[in-house]
Length: 321
Length: 262
Image 1 (cartoon, rainbow over the protein chains, first blue to last red):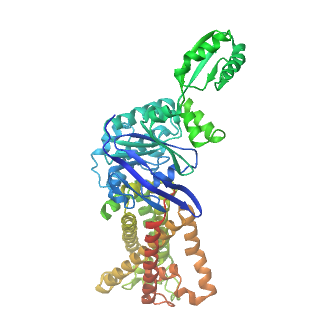
Image 2: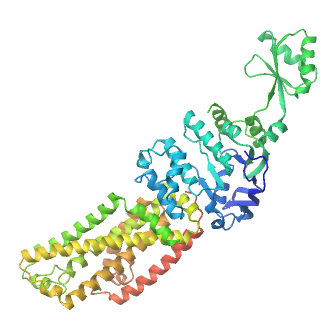
């Protein structure tokens, strides 16, 4: 993955989209470095898909300006020939074969038909490309969507929920595919509600809420800004309550962990020795003391303010996936 | 670029079930009209709007009668196909893929439209040729002389009839494209179009006779038949052209400006 980033592949200023009196994307300033794999996350209805559609010329911005691969956002024909996209669920003609579906798109985009075989091989559909699309499994449909996005040998790949509906093996394959594309120098802008996927794949991140950016930058920067916790485990489980109380008495923010075997102390790793000393002073022997980085999920909830409900459930399922 | 959009659309149109199905279906239907005419023809004088008699069929325009009667069928198929082709892109969600590869929307629309027009014109000409072949065989069976069909007048009448038919089919396909784009649902567009063309216009025309001169479906049918007793060919052609140009502009503007959220 490139470490030196030359310019922004996507840059927007004040990008806004309103449908009637409802503002879906609200003065969004995006900055996606060239060569990065940039995650795009936010709760349901945050404006992710609308933003992606504006970048692809499918939806006209209400206001704002921007560039995509150096082309004017308001003139999509100036840059879309170098962009590949998978927008929401893959959409193809059910009666045509996978190969003919790609042929229709390649012909439309004036792309050499010779590239079709290559992209089909790359996504692992070489042998099944003659089958009708309607007979494809969900994973095959998703892979054909990626193949369609790769037809134009893009410099920017926009993927909206690329792992939707894939089984764990399919997710792993998709992850490897995206990594290999990034290794080729393609900028990948990937929207996903699977935070674990974003964590695995992306080096940059854009988080939005209610159409506004709440974080943009490196994933590592986000983690560092979120800090870390110290997790301590007493010798006996029933000592958790006493240990939490002792630590709180010493000025720490401490709670019994969800597993009821440990206590989580909200402080930096430099306080580990003091935490141990406080426990020892109270006569509680520790069997475990570890620094735990706060997860992207916690950062997500903190920044987007979604602690309950559907979004939390979705993100938690994402961690399992 | 329009050529690329045109060729891309043909990859869809040339799939065997659609291509052979439409061509064979229309040829069969047009041939059935010929069978109906030749089997029912007798020596009785033909009334206005009725089936031609044996003497009528022996005239230079004898071949044209069957084509005239097939206009509404061919028109409805052209309408349905055009509406389904454009509305289907919304229903399937494929429009967003197409617009990423061809963001100049009028170019995409023009290519798709021309492909559908070519497809339907091909189907009409094929059906006409088959129906004429069937007519020749039936004429022999009914001992109807066909020499006049191949006279210069006969060839001229036939050419004119085919041209009128093609014009009408282009008009129906334009209507279908517009309705499909505005309604964005294949089923809804086809059902609404069929209901309008096959039923509602008929009712309006019966209740308000003068409306026939202004109803789009009736005007296109009149063009396809080379004129009618109540509406002249020229009037039908001019009013239809005005309708279709206005509709074409409106369709292109809507397609170019409307957000794609499907």
